[in-house]
Image (cartoon, rainbow, N blue to C red; front, side, top):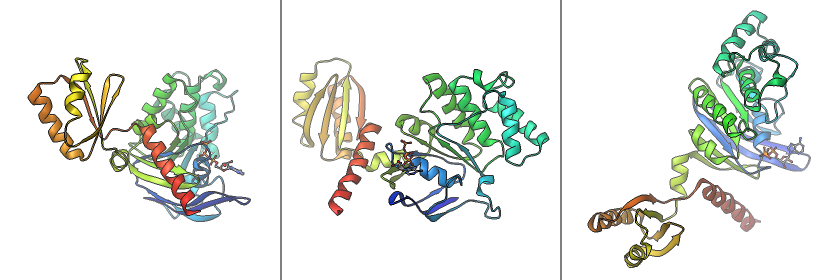
Amino acid sequence: MIHVEHLTKTFGKHEVVKDVSFQLEQGKCVALLGPNGAGKTTTLRMMAGLICQTDGKIQLPDSSTSDVRQQIGYLPQHPQFHTWMSGKEFLVYVGQLAHLSKKRSTKEAEVLLKRVGLEGAENKRISKYSGGMKQRLGIAQAMIHQPKLLILDEPVSALDPIGRRDVLNLMQELKRETTLLFSTHILNDAEEASDQLLLMNDGEIIESGSFADVRLKHSLNKVVLRFEALDMETYINILVDLPFVNKVEEKKQEIHLYVDNMQKARTELLKLFSEKNWPVIYFELGSMSLEELFMKVVNQHAMADRIQS
Ligand SMILES: Nc1ncnc2c1ncn2[C@@H]1O[C@H](COP(=O)(O)OP(=O)(O)OP(=O)(O)O)[C@@H](O)[C@H]1O
């Protein structure tokens, strides 16, 4: 376990990370989500040992090493490379900065270049690399000293769809061997790549847990239906009279039902579809897009803050 306890950072009078506590289970991949300015980068930079916290502590698995950076690999939001170097030269150089011998660093570099899919490009100058290749090289440099925790700050936000896909696939592989914490504001990427989320807003963690649990907690009493045949009126006229349905909305080719009780709605609707032989092609319970969920939690938090003050 990696424990972050009461982490706080103040710049001048501005408290940008406010008493943040969370735990990262070893071998998990966790997404740190939040709007611009929420405090994600500041939190990650404190965890990476790049800036000092004003208060609180970060406890890593191996407490015997005094320099936490030996246990942590970090990819900054805007990584910088010596672009006149080749990918391999750069990795060997970074490995030596992380106190590996030249021999060990060269060996690790060769293994990592294959792992991140830069085989064949290892002797090419970094200036000739695409954005996705640079990002994969950035991940390799963060892993050269085999850290226990890999921290990636916005690893995919600046990439085109192909680069994004490559890096997301790589993250899927890496999470099998190291704990991974990455920040993003691309919600679908977060859900695809990670097991858990930490949602940050205005310097605080306002939601955490698995995506499934968070979705369940904030799910709406709403059912979305789509039918193969588009005679919407017929369906709506029947659905609107069901005792557990409060409201029916027609949205493009979907019918949205707002219901009292999700369990009852599920059972009764399935019975109805079967009795009437309705050609249902889509049936979703408690639906809310990730964006809606994100906005709901952030707005609830802002509202609670306003009421308190
Ligand atoms: N060195 C600094 N000095 C003063 N204020 C800072 C410093 N670094 C960050 N901040 C402020 O701290 C707040 C949080 O910034 P941070 O970069 O951690 O947010 P973020 O969630 O990573 O945002 P983004 O998604 O835009 O990168 C912002 O208001 C920012 O202006």
